[in-house]
Each structure stands twice: as C-alpha cells, then as structure tokens.
Length: 162
Image 1 (cartoon, helix red, strand yellow):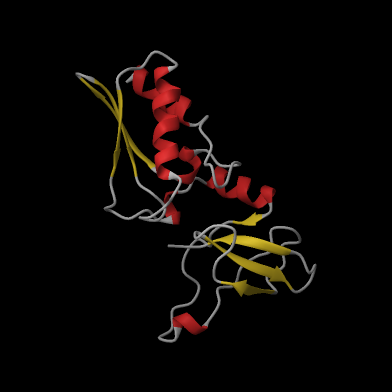
Image 2 (spheres, rainbow, N blue to C red):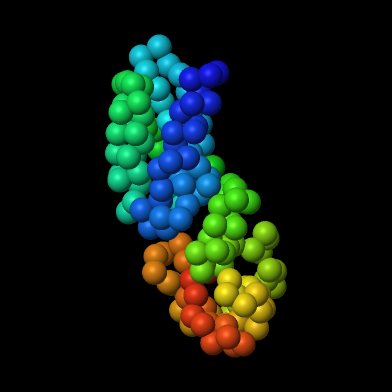
C-alpha cells in the first residue's frame, strides 16, 4: 500500500500534454495502480477514444516510475467505462479556471429533445459571467469548445462535459 501511495504521488507530477496545468490524476484518466508480481501496472482511460496524447502519457508514466526505481512498468488502456468529466478532481477544475479554461459543468445543462441546437450555460473563467455563447464546437483540442463572454468580450475554451 505504501508503494501504491508513492506511485500515485509520482503520477500527480505528470502533466497532460494538451492542458499542462492539469496532472493526469487531476484529469481523472488514471483509473488504477496495481502492484503485480512482475512490476507495476497503471490503468488509464483516454478522455476520447482517439486522444492523440495517450501514447505520450503512457510513455511519461513509464519514464516517471522507472526513474524512481519502479520497474518493470506496464500501462494498460481501457475504454470502458468511458471517461467522464465527473472523474476530474475539484482541484483540477479550479486549476482549469485559473488557467483561463472554463471547467466542465457539474452536469449536463440542456436536457431537451433538441439538445444539439442548444448551448450549455457556461461561466466565463475571466469575469464569472454566464452571459456567454459558443463560437465553435471545437476549441484548441477536441475535448474543448470555443466560447466568448458577452460581458468581458474575452474568448475562452470550455472543457466539454461527457
């Protein structure tokens, strides 16, 4: 158990390549750490099944743990259950806001049959206004949408719920 706690702390030092303010633990993609007879196994789940950062993240996990004496290290990727923004830590959501990215809403805001025609009420990370509108369904990465605040006029990414 002490080894597992140490490994979790080491994993908290690995940042997400697409959102460097978040650790992979903050993001919630690390699902499990298991001590095996033949080494350490870390289980991860991508935010999207085609996330281009997952190979780099797996490599960073192996390098981080092996550089601290844990070897061999295997990284297992699972797709089910699918990653959800509910797995993000509250600290991670606050880090996003401080970085200028609106964190995901706690739950889906739009629950009508014409869901795809409506926008979520997204709070501006700069001035905290809810008077915002979506500019593009996709922002700097596939997991974010681009919004603009109607009050402060600043554009910002929104980390989409799913």
